Length: 200
Image (cartoon, rainbow, N blue to C red; front, side, top):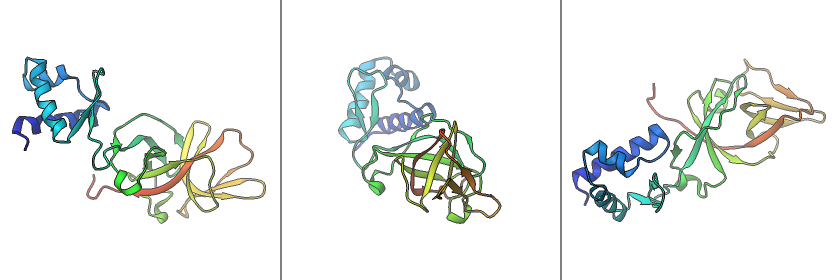
């Protein structure tokens, strides 16, 4: 059973990881909770590790990670992807979605947050996260994340004889036609959608 201070430190570590993208150092935890001794901080980290709340990697200043139990190796959120006109593809680590229990092995999965409404008839809404399996091929009709130069978009993949069409699931948007574009490639196929209920 964790004491109140250990629970507070665990909450701080989780909040810090969400906001900063990495774990706090022992000294940063000490400053936050006015614990002057690094051994004092390590005492609480040992409690959290023994209880299965965290895991630590020795020799790394920010080596505090989530426990490996319960599917805690999450799917990294790498940025946002357009569901409208393509936007600049940004691959910046922005936290993780803990979906190991749902999808199994997560090594080949990543998540992107959707912007735009071109896939709403496929149940993919603005603000949703699409869970994408990394691969460079797809079958006709699959929902893919495709890269056009430095711009990424999520669409249905429809190969034709002389070109490829990236088709929206919203009648307001015409298909994007790709004809032998050397900058076009498939980043992966969409495996699922995650939506937050009651978000702003």
